[in-house]
Length: 410
Image 1 (tube, one colour):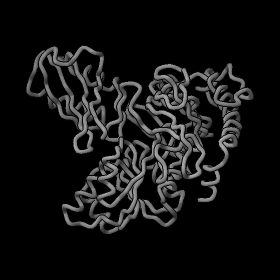
Image 2 (tube, one colour):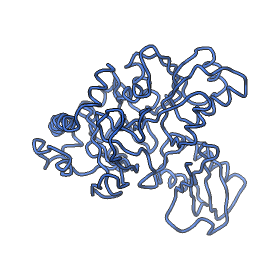
Image 3 (spheres, helix red, strand yellow):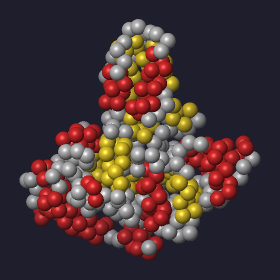
Image 4 (tube, one colour):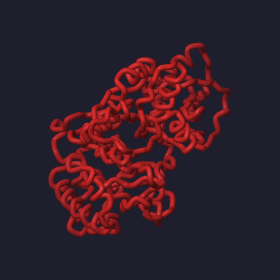
């Protein structure tokens, strides 16, 4: 399997593009025949004419923000699947809500990122991504199982119990958010509980700036980052030898001007648009809302795929917090449920490499229960705990923002 991975990753770029577009044309034909949601989108598209990235621009962009609307029209998955919904292995619920299917046998292709991070057959992987409704835990577990690794399903929370499990079960790899890895390593050190069996990790779900990478290395567990979504699977991944992220073999990547369909030149920062080559749940020119840019320089490891700078922020106000997406419409729902709130804003920050969440509330009539009610509504809607601050009238700027991201990464 390792040789197969490297052969694909080091093949000539022209060969990769030819292979990908051959597969894409097969997928387009299949979607036109079998997918109720894709039929109207692709009605004017002749698959045999889609030969390269320039031709790909004939297909309209579908934005992530449109998924909920599509799924409301044709529940539960927008009619975007090739096979019946009840034939998938799993169905998941992501914040929004957005519903996602799951399959078997490394459905999301996460094994490639794990192989790049050095994971091998026989490893024991400690997986701290969530298994509750959202697919992140399953995504990583399938990838690890695909390469023959054993997985400990840690999930999120219960730090003390997780440290004890690591101490006894001796996993040698970590998968999860970088901030939780930092918490585990520091808590183990403070508690004098040995968690040093974890030698390397693959992290995602939130930013991992160079300063945090350095801290994790100093704590004994250097990490690489993967970038993927529940909808698309693996999009890109880091390697030990290069800066930036290599695009996965199962996706075709474009960078467009945010909010438009204008493809930008290599090196310009824009919105990441992804076409995945999933024969059960294909997404054509799917705009993620994430910002990135193409790295022009050749790699030093022989890999020939397009390389991007990784996650560089959001093209819209949708924000990823503690591994979960938070969208403006969710904030509006919270506000609409509480009668005396005139304005509400979610402010995201970070302290000591951990995301912080504060909800600023302008209220017409302040009562003792308001703060408690908003905390509970936020927990129910966002699946996240938030601090609440009641502020006076006209404190929140009239600038249209409902989500303000003040995080800095140094």
